[in-house]
Amino acid sequence: MKKTVTKLADGRALVYYDSRDDVVRDAPDHRPLDPISTTSEIRHDALLGDAVAIASHRQGRTYHPPADECPLCPSRDGRLSEIPDEDYDVAVFENRFPSLAGDAGRCEVICFSSDHDASFADLTEEQAGLVLAAWTDRTAELAELPEVEQVFPFENRGAEIGVTLGHPHGQIYAYPFVTPRSALMLRNAAAHRAETGRNLFDDILARETAPDGHGDVDGDGGGDSGGRVVLAGEHWVAFVPYAAHWPYEVHLYPRRRVADLRGLDEAARTEFPQIYLELLKRFDRIFGEGEPLTPYIAAWHQAPFRAAGREEFALHLELFTIRRTSGKLKFLAGSESGMSVFINDVPPEAAAERLREVASK
Image (cartoon, rainbow, N blue to C red; front, side, top):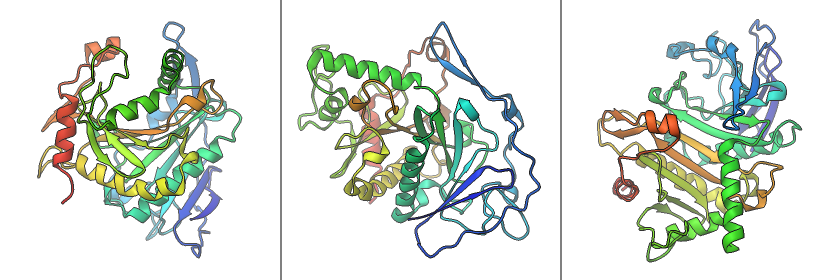
């Protein structure tokens, strides 16, 4: 992988990641851009303990532009974009409309391909491996910023999710605090260690991969019905969790526990594109032929950098869709939005079976 660091016209960082070492990236950004002015602010909810980002400048962000005005396509034929070069493999730049900025963190955009009409599932294994390398490099670099406590790479796909740019891309948030979701995982992992002397994430993975498909991680005295493994390799396992929140939700774990992307060994990095690309292709087949591409969120859960209990955390990717059946979405209504109690219409075992049925031939 070759990494080239440069600047956009308004001073934001732009990083190219190329699979070939002989590629030269020196095209300047000729756009007459004003310096970025943001109003990002972190406020704390005293009642719930949550952190909320207030970012009023995002009201003016680019919204569903036509394909020939896409800001994530390369700059070609006199049309200037966020990517000054006329082509690229993977590109990462600071978001022009960030949710987090300055002391309140940092937001980056990662473009998976220069092909506007592609999706992540269309990438080759080499291209997907390059994206993984970019995610890892961004995690390592952002970890060095004193204000950053946690790095969250993720992809939103589909208008139903709220995506406003159709180009294949994701985002990387660098939070100046430990997110509530991660803090809760750490507390539960600490409680499990105190009660059992074992690691919670290891026990979950052992339950899902047990030959008899049974285990009792949650301590309720009953066996947790298995059959939820969707895809398994030598170094990665994908399964529908026992208490899945979403209609179709898959968690992807490396078999060897590591705290974040930096800890993956070469064998896990090599196998990841094979497993992940197949998983994404299955998601697009869930609802049958002729259906629109499945909207999804893909989220990397990484350990906060300085939190107590970091060594207990396990890197994993969570992939889920808000579509519950053909033409119908799962809305977060009263119970989910009001009380954070999810109600899932699709049994996890049925979801796993469906995802096995649609395996590539």
